[in-house]
Amino acid sequence: MFGTDNRISNLQVAILMIHTVIGVGVLSLPSTLAEMLGTTGWIALIITGGISSILVFMMTRLMAMYKGQNLFDISSELMGRPLAYVSFVIIIIHLLGHGAFVSRIFGEVIKMFLLFSTPIEVTIVTFILTAVYTVRSGIEGMARFSIIIIPFIVIPLSILGVVILPDLDFTNLLPFLGASPMEIIKSIPTIFFSFGGIEFLLIYMYYSKKPESAMKYNIGAIVVITILYLLSFFFSLARFGEKGLAVQLWPLLSLSKAIQFPNAFVENVEGIIMAIWIVIAFTTLISSIFGASVLIGKMCKVEEYKYFTLPLLPIIYFVSLIPRNVVQVYDYVQIFTFVFGTFASLAYPMLLYVLAVFKKKGEAKKNENIM
Image (cartoon, rainbow, N blue to C red; front, side, top):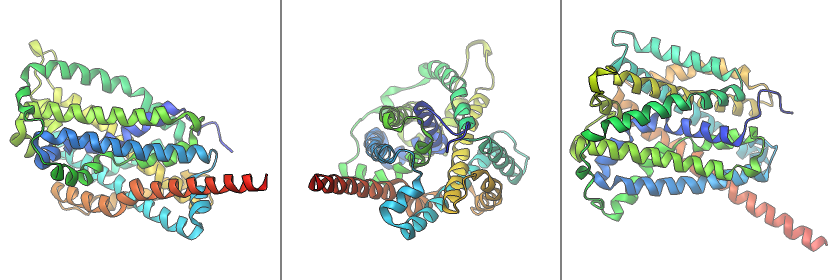
């Protein structure tokens, strides 16, 4: 049975996915694209967005086919209970790692740009504790939060984008086709990390009021994410150039330093960008904690996922401190994404969808024979 705090609209599902996906990937994506493909990075982005759209289509169709059933029940029916348990363990590890790396990157950014003398451990544990509290408010509270913050993100970013236009050199975007097809193909697995988070649809769709009509919202979310990534890449490339962008750690934060308002109307533009990113990163973390808590609850046959939120805090905290520096954080992220993220975002949803399609066709043929 659904309670009063766990039904959300398809729009809220889509907004949650947008915030979850762009939370961390948007920081380093422009420099990654410039380093791997130079000015041709936009092509790989569009291709990866297309692949993500196909995966989102599969996930949405799957959850619509099994409306009212949670992911563990669907997995058990299609794969068998033993494989469902194994799959859930892998996905839970992925979600906890995702949350840990988000927390560590958050801590590194805050220490570098805002709280220079505050121990990173204090920043991280405060971030996680606040996220745990928010998750315990329920999925509806999380969804409302994600809707409320939209104007505070879109309006400032739109104004800042217009202000910085005169300082951009769009000739830096040329040539449009500088990389070979093979280089583009090889870059896609790395770029796919920035679309990590689409797998949360398999969790959020269970709480959707009308999963059968969610397709346009979910595909639209991927289109929005892809456009945002393209804009961040083009703006960063136009400002720094190919070589300058490739050596930037977090180009969007560096880009904010170049923004100057007339008559010093706003002096600390960097602070505005930081505030916007903090809110988005926070949404990414609450999604990770919520997803892991829900999946653990389903595995343990416990309906109240909130029992598991607080015990996850020390796990996420200590894992976030394993990398020695920010460079090692991104090295770990690549390895972790390849091992666990590929399964959670790619292999697992594809396998479930294929099994579901064959099962439904088999049932339809069986019914025809009976008639």
